[in-house]
Length: 474
Image (cartoon, rainbow, N blue to C red; front, side, top):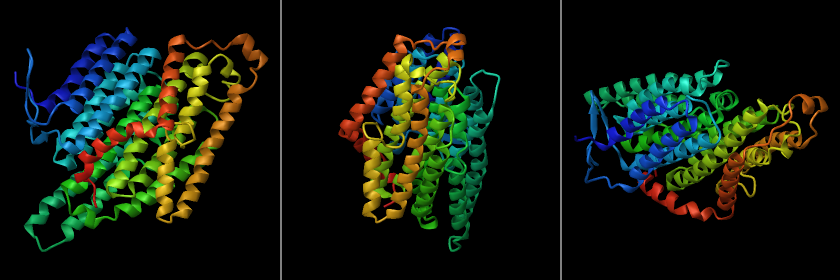
């Protein structure tokens, strides 16, 4: 049976999701299956050439052939490969985390379906149809984000809202592009299409003040589900933002991307830092730390050219590790304490050392604190901004980072405090499982190594940059 490679990337997670659903009562087994599928796909995209033929006992896979479904074509382009490898790789880590720290029966099958949708978004052509596929994925992700629980639905619905607001702009822009060849001397259709693309990306990026999904997901959803949705959505949208100028070269002439990316990035970072100071639970605190970090990524991307792409890739890698560490720690705190509020977690550090270290270093990694995964990338960003004489931006950015750090100092003080006597008698703090401590220890070790030797990720960033170079405006 001849099966194009894009169909394998989209279809295999769907088939695995059906099997994971049958195994849903065995949560660890289902999560391990999902991790194996995601790791297999990450390795396949990274290692397989773009041309050739792979013959297996069941399938014959032409690697360079597209898959056509109706009027849409799905093809693996060089510029999409780094994002796919990163997407499948982070999903592998999320599923492995669910093996150690249960996330609910819906996590493995739901996560695989969402992963398939993200992959389809990166593979679809024409490119202006990608936001429509992303909106359909966000609709499926509602059930994944809810995690089979009866309770607040803000996180599940907010992650769906902005992709649904965005995709009509892209469809309308596609219509205007189709009108442009009918009257080549009239620049109005392309100018209108450029403005529509800009408005569409404004909604897709989810920067402040359209940032509501991040804090809500980490506050209400299973933490690793929030991690996968946030990182997956960021990866897909940022990759599309880099690829659009390659596919539509005239777009760079219609939109001043540098100016609006810099404004969005600074506003998002400042908003995240200001909001983080007043939080009283670790879920929303981690969410606003992620908002602040997302602003830093947009600031890095505003540098434009290969330099901006390299800065964005480095910070995205650091973001994935810091956010995974924080979400894993948050899962342990909720599993053992039933809550993540500062008042409820007072004195928990003595019996939950792994979670305590993880929730602090994961959050501070999102502000680039020394000896955390984000330190090297954040320092490089500030140096580059100072070289452009953006002193005011650097000052505001540093103040917003201090706001996030202050929020974590307050949380840390609560974890190190004394357990109220009435709480100690009624609901004593249980120790975290050894497997959870080992998982947190591994993540923290990787984060420290990345902080001490950031050059270890340079080869990956270089290969990704080579693939993306054609998609970056000079």
